[in-house]
Image 1: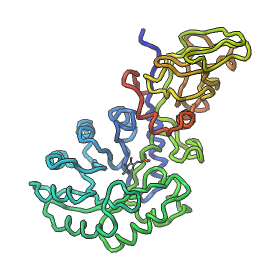
Image 2 (image 1 turned 90 degrees about the horizontal axis):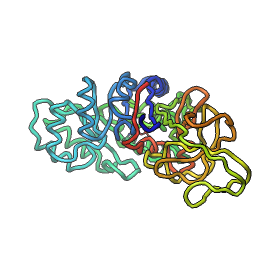
Image 3 (image 1 turned 120 degrees about the horizontal axis):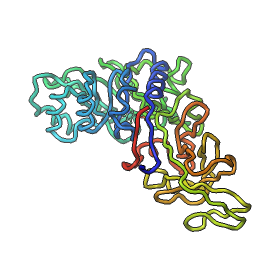
Image 4 (image 1 turned 90 degrees about the vertical axis):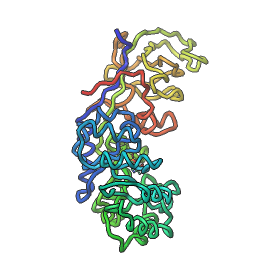
Length: 369
Ligand SMILES: *Cc1c(COP(=O)(O)O)cnc(C)c1O
């Protein structure tokens, strides 16, 4: 029997979450963001669930190839654009749209031989200082692109640093709008947090809807709240797209004073039953999760105790006295009322849901339900 650990991908949840984002931006087209192998879920596994999207956005060229291999004929956007000149040949061959964020990428385009003009998304650095042209340089970059026979339609985009928090998007929106006001072309500004928090008709910034011919939800499609813990996924009506589950493979009866695991990090203050679960940090479960991190055993909420080790972790069976070897443990995800939010586990580990889903280990078998 294989080791009893499994990740399950839920296409219905993907479909539901994507539709939820689309409803919040009813006039926008939707990029399903599937970079990083669909945030660890697997591009091939999420494709059916996300195919109602208007396009797929990602950044590895081999991932673009994989989306084409799945039969997708619609738009694919390279969010970081090309990395070297010959990448443009693949863009021509596969019909990829690509971001242009620096002069070097325009230089490459100017040298590129193509019969079909490329659709590009010109990226503005409106304050995040990661990718893009500064506002003062943006219009010159637009004119350079516009003059190239290799370039067809030019779309305008930027990315928010603070859509999920108190700083918000207003300052970056103002810069973007002031700079692009009279430029033609479609606009794309919002990630999940901007779509959930700022897009609704009564949202904080009506400018966002106007600048959203395309929205770019990633994390929300996978059922994690970008602004946890201010809001949880349930607040936004999102469902987990991945469940990580494993089984109890051993049980220990502890006496008061007994300890559990490496470093004797947990000390029993009373008699208790402990379940040893076939999931550890080599599966992608964070080692730093402390005693008290939530899990479900046979559907009943309980907690981890002691240190997470490479292949195992330990849980308190107190709330479920009849649990034993073979009992099912949900580490994150689930469905209906039986859910461990990935964001709650991430928070216990001092990180975000994004990192946990992306770090699901290769050795964990994955199925699609
Ligand atoms: C990753 C990414 C997104 C999606 O962000 P989420 O927070 O996952 O919604 C959108 N736009 C760009 C440019 C990205 O790189």
